[in-house]
Image 1 (cartoon, rainbow, N blue to C red):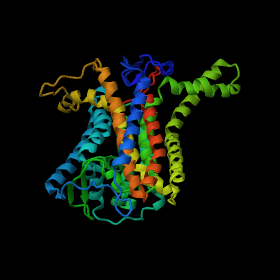
Image 2: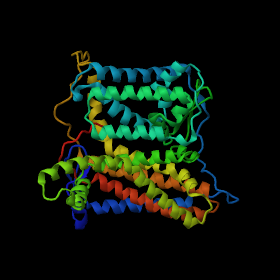
Image 3: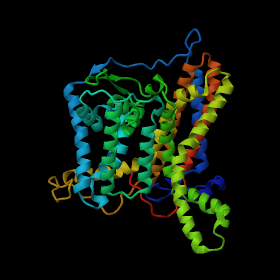
Image 4: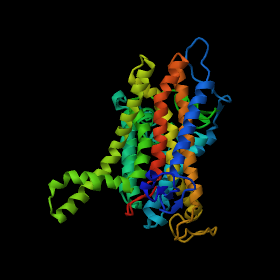
Length: 486
C-alpha cells in the first residue's frame, strides 16, 4: 500500500490518498493518516498497561514463564503420515525443477515461479504460523541428505562461531535475487541446484542434524515462524519418530531464548528485508540518493552531464544493494540501543548480550505480520490460477478439468479492504509482541517493578516499529520498472 503523496502526512488532518503496494492503485483514506498512527500507538500503550496490571508474578518473587503450557498430551505421528509429508516435499521440489526446465519460457506462464516465489516462500510460512513447522518433517533437502549420508558421521564438528551465519548469507542472497534479478525459470533452476549442492555439502561436512539446525535457510526460517503456531512437532534423537502437541498460540516465543547472536540478526533481517523491499522503489528512498547524496558528490563529475548520468546510474545500483545488506545492522543497532536503556532502567546485572538473546523472539510477530501485510495480496491473486497451472504444468495444452486460464488483466482488488487489512495485521502483530516482551520480562526480572521498567524502552521500540511499518506501506512508488516476483 503506497501513499500517493508522502507530503500529505505533514499537511495536517485532511483526508489522504493511498495506493496499492504492487498495483499502484489510488485509494482515498476515510480518515487522516495521522489518526491511524495515533490509534495504533494508543492500542499498544493500552496493551502495555493491561499486561502490567493483570500479569501475575509468582509467589516468592522469582519470575517464571507464564502459564501457557501445553493444551494436550503429545500424540505420536504415524509413520505413514511422516512418509507422506516427505514424499510431498520431494514431489514439490521435483515439480518446481522440472517445470522450470521444461515448462514455458514465459515467466507468467511457468508453474515453477508460482510454486517457489508465491507458494513456498509465502504460502508455506503463512500456513506454518497456523499449523506449526510441518516443513521440519517434509524438508526435501533433509530427506535427500539423510538418504545419501545413511547414518555417516560428520567429518567435522559444527563450529560454534559459525552459528546461523550460513542461513543469514543464504537469506540475503535470496532477497537480493528477489529484488534485483529478473524472474526467469532458468535462474530459478540455477538457484535451486546451487542451493541443493551447498546444503548437501554442509550436511556432509557437519552432519545433517547440525546443518539443518543452523545452516539451512528455510529450516531456520520456518522453525522460527513455527513458534507462533498452536502446534508443536518434536522428534527423538534419531529423527525417525515425531510427536504432535497442541499448545496455546505464541507460547513458543516465550519457552526459550535465542541461542546465538547470529539468530538475533536473522530475526532482525526477517523484519528489515521486508521493510527494505517496501521502501527501495519509493520516491522517498530514491530521493535520499538523488536529492541529497549526489549533491555532496557533485565535485566528482563537475559540469559534464554525460559523465554525471553514467556515474549516477552506477552508484545508484551500489546504493540499492548496500541498503539491503546494511539493513539488519541498522535494526540491530537500534535494538541494542533500546536494550541498553532497559539495562539502565532496571539496574539489572544481566549482560546486554543476554538481554538481546532473551527478547529476540518478541520481534518475530512484527516481522511475520509485516511480511503478510506486504505480500498477502500476491498470494490471493495467484492462488485462483494455480489449478490451471497444475493441470497443465508443462504448457502442453492438457487442462483436462477445464480450468480458466489466467487473465491478461490484473485482478481488481478492494483497496479499502486491502489497506485496512494491512493496518490491522500490523497492529495485531505489534500487540502480540508487546505481550510476549512482557512475558519475557517477567521471566528475567525478579520484581514487577523491574519488569515494568524494562518494558518502557521496549514499548517505545514497538510503537516506533508500528509507525515505521505504517509509514512504509503508505509511501508512494517512483514509477520505474524493476524486477519483483514475490
